[in-house]
Length: 270
Image (tube, rainbow, N blue to C red; front, side, top):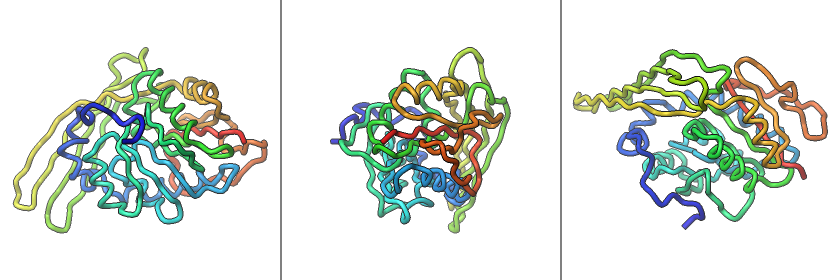
């Protein structure tokens, strides 16, 4: 058993349990192509060559599917159902079930990637734990990259959606409505409606509300530094001029691809 593996059930949300098999239709892997290219370029700004990457909170493996090959990925997620979906998409990657707050694999990697699964951490204590996990698994000279969907300063209420159709006629789609019940705390709410249509036309509608983290940018930078990282980042509003500056202070080429709305990096000193 991997040290730190969750002893309890998978997360309470159905999206990560019985609906996990619908994830490739709800949020198709192809939609991650441009952002994954950007993240690959960010990972390459580490002070050491990057080959081995730990992906914490890998979900259905959609980001990983665009990174695997050139990179040797180890994927970790708390949801057994999501890991099963990812194994079908990424059969060449190692998969482990575990909690990103407490996981300890007993080895280090050239880089650590934490994509939007970090959103499900809603307390500063939990965020500190995830950052400490990343530091514990990051080789000296390596880099940790965090990609939250929201920060407190840039959050805006709104709505959105997406989905796709499979060749056999199955359809999966979603709508979302975002709100912040209390701007003074570190989390927001997103109401989801999933519409799932089987090949025979049978349709199920699932509604659930997820609580997601939205931390202040200063909190991100402080916690990264306290863990031992050299911290930098940006959000939609733009900040931290040190973005993509190497540890030695020399500038590096800006990554190509689709830049995510928010990104924080921690470089582990040699």
